[in-house]
Amino acid sequence: MKRLVILISGRGSNMEAIVKACAAEGWPAEVAAVISNRPDAGGLLFAAERGIATAVVDHKAYASREDFDAELARVIDSFAPDLVVLAGFMRILTPGFTARYARRMLNIHPSLLPAFTGLHTHERAIAMGCKIAGVTVHFVTAELDHGAIVMQAAVPVLPGDDAKALSARVLTAEHRIYPQSVRWFVEDALMWDGERVTHRDGAAQQLLLA
Ligand code: GRF
Image (cartoon, rainbow, N blue to C red; front, side):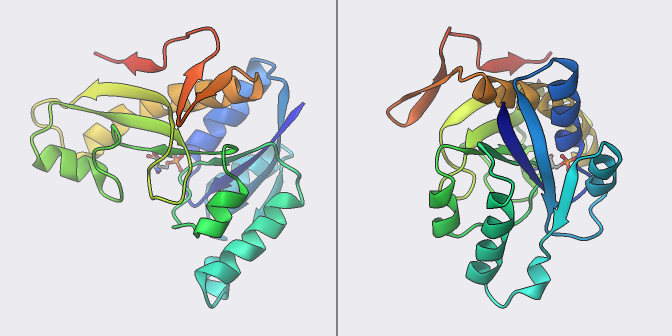
């Protein structure tokens, strides 16, 4: 059984999708804990109701990023995870922290990386006149929204879309590719080829939604 620790900052819908898929599909894994940097993160309630351990490491209580990351790592490691899953976790991480979890920490970013790293991806895609938008699941490195891509999903940007409409369309795709990516990790189906990641049996690492 692989142990997962999921980090959230807010509503936690990706965390919820992973928890549900893990149970419904009988993955060889268990969600050992859900950790938030915000005490009021909505997702904490869902996790607690499911009997999953929860913890809060409030970034506001620490003088520096290093101090916060050190405490976060201590709490994460107390649950002995095989994989750390960043699911809407809105903190920039120090290089020491990302190195500690190299090749065992995933993130989801709501753009087709390497386009639109950082915040406000949907607003920026619409402002640029993009016709296709999407979402990426990738391993985390020291560079923000970088690292080997596990899966991407593409969705159309439709005339008249605002950021809310586009983010809702992208979120549907997120809830499909994040559980799929985590499942591959826990099944040991992901292979490293240099700096790239492929599926052992050549499963499609992209999802194209019309
Ligand atoms: C998602 O759009 C995710 O891609 C981004 O933050 C949002 C988190 O949503 N990083 P939720 O908390 O999983 O509902």
